[in-house]
Image 1: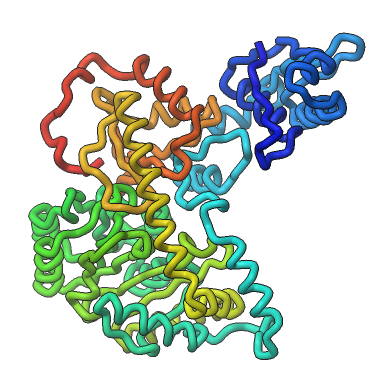
Image 2 (image 1 turned 90 degrees about the horizontal axis):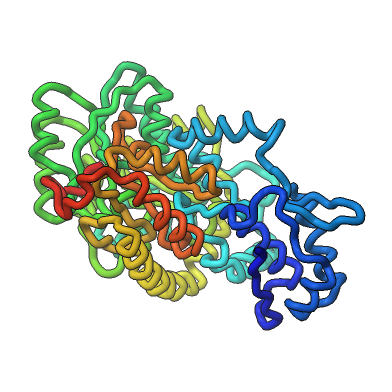
Length: 486
């Protein structure tokens, strides 16, 4: 039976409210294939809308494949997964824990899907009005170069502004030590290309940034996972790895680690730098979520002053994923070498986007916007933690900020099965195996707090978890639960 509520006071069009309501009930299988929807006149009367509104909504649902229109009979729920669509669905389910598949899924913001696995913030959370205002301002300027290539190292005024912002974090870097990139992804790629070749081994966090892992595996690099604890990398385990391997590089995240949202402690940071000096490896520290942390945080580059640390940042998460402006800061000689790699692989980065970010940072609005974002993320995190507790999941460590919560399912050996099941219900989950260096099983999942409040997510978890959890789930605190390692 169709149960929707249309509210004329909402800013969403009445047609869209009807379409969204019907789609959600079909996706949740409340409305089953073959069920008949209310006649146009009756739905218009019960929702107090015009018949034309209902007609348009039903027509859209037919075009989207949710309904079948039968002349003289009415509108019926379509068997959407029958026939030719079945192979596509089978492929989607089978690839539900594949890194490339997950990247495609979380960038597909189709309205019927719940993107609990998303790595970005919803568009409505970002300051789009300010971006558009600065875009118009930039286009009116006579010196804007909108059609030519940028310079290899990046727009000089933005690099100078980054010098000032890094100094506020206690990191001394001149503009010549800063290279602008096409987001943090390119910065990580440049570092990997310069230092690593097929067959080399590299240190990475376990769990850690899954897209980086996919890229490194694509290059034929062997990943050595360093277990991640609540206060940062497990330096004892790292020391054991260094006894048997001689890696040149360690990719990590000091602040708001992805996926655990933990931050490194000063003691662990000092020990990590000691090991880097002793065993002669460099550290690429991805600080992409740094602006989301509230209050002071320990950064490896602040302690090391870019001697062995390559500091990486980006404004894709806070300003615009479409602009894709990132940077890296390191020793001067290394900055020049990485600029050469950038020239050979991409020539330059987009100066127009770099000018936009420079304008956003210098006109004074960005800091206030980030402060508001802190509050919104904190409130969403609290609600997400409550949701996960209600459905029986466990969070071993409260996030230090940011947009992710790393939670486990007690009694479930591997959350990949849950992710497979979610695909069938339009729920895109990020299983813990994806965040492990070699896709080892994990009971964890990463939730984006900005997307976790969707009612369909709680219904799905609440109904599905009791059927999937093994009997030993009654053990509240299994051995080793203090560690956030997947």
